[in-house]
Image (tube, rainbow, N blue to C red; front, side, top):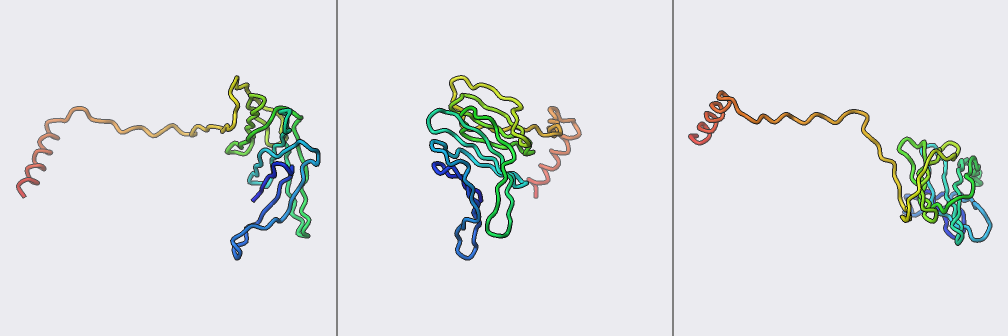
Length: 175
């Protein structure tokens, strides 16, 4: 489990202990020691890459950082910074596309949503939200195959079908 601190701008890796039914901190990393920066959101993809949003407490700016988690087995795990966005709008929440190739970032203070490449955090697109303060955004997917055809409803019954239904009903009532 990865946990992001808000006022101590750092994140920690926690491991679940089945015997104690609790969590133990395995590793942690401080993102910045500068005052007035807080953690916003943390995501981890299937490859173990960590995406963290950092926000300024009062000037509505922030950035996204990507880390690789390198467990050393010596008790001092490493977090290598591999990409970082420029300081920009206030990133409130992030979500990841299903194929994990893009990050969708809601910039609450900036009234915008940005789409970033998960590889290098370069901006791929985005839009302004007007007066709306975006909190959540998720990528919608279309199913790659057309939907199944609905069964055809037969509007008229043939005389043969009516006769067959009548015989079945008569047998049910007579028995």
